[in-house]
Length: 272
Ligand code: IPE
Ligand code: IPE
Ligand code: MG
Image (cartoon, rainbow, N blue to C red; front, side, top):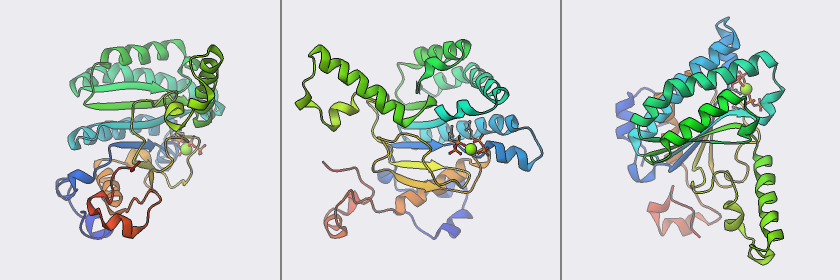
């Protein structure tokens, strides 16, 4: 169990923070809404793209931390369906940055035995960005040390609509009967199929909303909101988030008394 108050922990080194984490109470899956790049740049009198570019370093930190801690799944929100409403110049620059990131990072992802997958309506991405997405997916498909899922042109409601449409097609084709439809079956049609639900959601930049991210999957996720802007959110901040997570009592509808019969399930998995 994590020790010390939040302010005491802040002064510890990364190594100390890491050593104090309870290995059996780590999340299996972390989801992140990477927000605040524009404000980070504005604070420095820089163009918004400078914030997006700097944010890539935070992504690298999260990948390395998950790998070091043995956390098997990391899902990051990089571009929402709603982000298509931004000025064309920013969208184009973001798409180029995505392409550049994938080119730059492919070797490192392979070296880190990280499987890359994109979720969202990726076919709406520019052709050259989509080609890189597919290439990196293909070339890392055999790894499973860390599952990195990047949400691109992603919307939680559309994901559910797409799942329901495919399910309806199967009902129409006669391969599924309506009485077989339950949560597990529907889950199988979602783009995150095969990943456990996120245990921890982190959103940076002080906003306390979900912004259409993983609406189905976040049903019982622990939420961590921090004012830190994404380009400033590094290993130290993530370790503090993990300590905060380890203080939580995940009850999944049960009472505290029921849980105290099984104290090691405190931040445990959802029971059936
Ligand atoms: C998050 O940073 C990155 C994307 C949404 C692509 P923002 O660009 O939303 O940064 P702020 O919220 O304007 O500071
Ligand atoms: C959410 O951030 C999407 C991503 C981080 C990619 P936004 O900055 O677009 O969210 P809203 O619109 O302020 O809620
Ligand atoms: Mg934002």
